[in-house]
Amino acid sequence: MTFITRNQHKAQGQRNPGVSPKTIERLSVYRRTLANLPASTPFIYSHELAAMCGSSAAQVRRDLMVIGTAGCPSRGYAVAELIELIDKRFAGISSHAVALVGAGTLGRSLIAYLQRRYHRLSIAAVFDKDPDLTSRVVYGIRCYPMGELRRVVEEQSISIAVIALPDASAQEVAEQLTAAGITGILNFAPVSLRVPSGTCVVDIDIAAALDKLAFFARTGRDQYLREVMDESRDKHGH
Amino acid sequence: MTFITRNQHKAQGQRNPGVSPKTIERLSVYRRTLANLPASTPFIYSHELAAMCGSSAAQVRRDLMVIGTAGCPSRGYAVAELIELIDKRFAGISSHAVALVGAGTLGRSLIAYLQRRYHRLSIAAVFDKDPDLTSRVVYGIRCYPMGELRRVVEEQSISIAVIALPDASAQEVAEQLTAAGITGILNFAPVSLRVPSGTCVVDIDIAAALDKLAFFARTGRDQYLREVMDESRDKHGH
DNA sequence: TAAGCCATGTGAAATGGTTCACAGAAGAGC
DNA sequence: GCTCTTCTGTGAACCATTTCACATGGCTTA
Ligand SMILES: NC(=O)c1ccc[n+]([C@@H]2O[C@H](COP(=O)([O-])OP(=O)(O)OC[C@H]3O[C@@H](n4cnc5c(N)ncnc54)[C@H](O)[C@@H]3O)[C@@H](O)[C@H]2O)c1
Ligand SMILES: NC(=O)c1ccc[n+]([C@@H]2O[C@H](COP(=O)([O-])OP(=O)(O)OC[C@H]3O[C@@H](n4cnc5c(N)ncnc54)[C@H](O)[C@@H]3O)[C@@H](O)[C@H]2O)c1
Image (cartoon, rainbow over all chains, first blue to last red):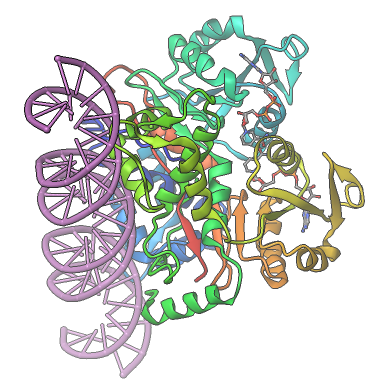
């Protein structure tokens, strides 16, 4: 959930010609959904995957084009092969080690979550300035003082960091991170980070998400009417 | 951070003719940014606000059109007036009380966050099935057993809920919520919720956000342009 | 009062993303 | 083997969002 949208997203380099962020996000969801499938489902149709992911069949097929699809009519896609192809598309290049900065309420919650449920990337190190936390082990991960950031990031070839800091510290720490070689930041602080070219920021703004929800999820029955009216025009293919 | 994108978002009713979700999200960010401005800044230019929010001047002006702008050349926008206009656009919508379901690791973190830093909407009640948690007060908010959901939601006119539950329980609880009258759900579980028409779901998918980051934040210096991606897509019911 | 400057508000163009619609391929039934 | 059905892969149409570009008008300076 983010919002920042500077005027980038240009060339995206030669490396990934025109793969849209939306597609990448959905591929991540497809990957997770496929991995949770029981072994009794070796094949899947685009419309089935779409239903499971809240997407549309055409959208799924279009997304799968970027991984070089090999679906077969009258059978669909081979689940195992699909997972492999998605992984290949995501593979390589950046290291899989992630740094987390800020072991407060949110930070600890994220450690618990990512350690437990997520396997492509994992938190390799936690940093905090609070001496009560540093040099301890938080949810099984070593928490370092900020002074060690550069060293640990370099030693472990970390290129991605998560910011879970008080708003006022976020910009300052973002600068330390990029100076240490971080090229991707997942930012939970509701501030707009200014980072050098070449660094990628993804913001997760929970307050803005709630506002959006409040705006669109109006109460009352005229809402209901609206949806019903929409459905007359809503084909919802397959 | 989400992904789901059924074919809704049509007319959006007569009430909000064609206000895009992106615009609403950015208005929320503008609102917060303006509110944090020192009193010594009574006026602001679109390009200044854009810089603070990581947007562009044209984007800001375009967004502000939906609130009926009253900027003045050579002075910019009156900050107080802008906040008031944004509030008016958001106002009258749904009740400002939010229910949180699931007082686990993430749930408690969210309570702390929303109580402390966010003022437009606030958590009015927490629900959990764990008897150790219910009937207690968590971070200053009463935690009810699930059986009281319908009663409390009705009594307090709650229309928005946050789901912070184990993945396996999310769908089942989403159904209880809509049955109780909830029309908007902020969903942190990485599952695609199926909800009746008229219910709006906003997903926050942290794993997908990290994958997206890993994909675009490749290491190396051939990436010249900063990449910023966005956002959440919302889904109304089927 | 006039001239220069600069920012707003907004059509219009550009870009990005989704859906449509159909050709072609593969299995099922006969 | 032929036909029927149903799905994939994809150009093209469609829709949404962003950016451009400029007419307009307020403020300042002289
Ligand atoms: N708690 C949530 O659920 C939640 C949700 C959304 C967004 N956020 C945002 O996430 C951020 C963190 O929230 P939180 O609730 O975890 O805050 P917190 O105060 O609980 O934790 C912040 C941590 O950062 C550490 N810290 C502070 N300054 C630092 C610095 N300069 N360098 C290194 N470490 C430093 C502190 O020691 C503390 O451990 C905030 O910006 C908040 O707005 C939080
Ligand atoms: N922890 C995080 O930072 C984080 C981040 C992103 C997403 N998530 C997702 O958020 C969800 C919750 O994560 P968590 O770490 O807080 O889990 P958790 O296990 O710590 O908490 C879950 C809570 O839900 C309650 N619960 C379980 N089933 C219930 C039911 N049927 N009705 C009512 N309450 C019920 C449990 O008693 C528990 O208190 C998960 O889907 C997780 O994938 C968590």
